[in-house]
Length: 188
Image (cartoon, rainbow, N blue to C red; front, side, top):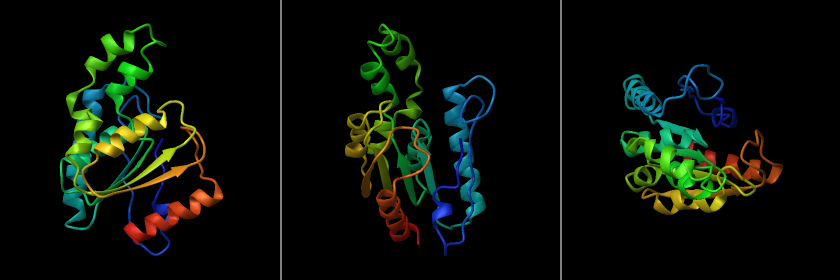
């Protein structure tokens, strides 16, 4: 589900938002396909680079969207990223969801994740600045998994731990103030 974050928090910055939700992701219909998802991310960033004509580009991702955002950042030409509940998808499936799926997530699903969406590898190749938001109560992507991405991230990074779970749409007042300050210092 695309949002206007962080643009809705930038009072004095001229900007535009491009959103990418391939079929099966966000609120779109159709079968999800992770290869197509990676393709869409790369195509969108390339089109955005041409359109931006040298202006700064920030990519944002939440949950599985962080896999696409990290792919874009690792590809270069991106100024920075805002990543909320960053997901090391393959490791999450191999370890966290292993018992819940009777091993299916480790032996059938995880190996099918395209290498281009390896969040840990892409984090190691990312040089752009990043803001990481970690939802402390996230049970879909527990914070320990999010921190694996953060620890692997090569570029400069700032981490903001926020209250709430995985799908929180709004931040608590103190977290909102801290987030706005971070955005203003990086994008303002």
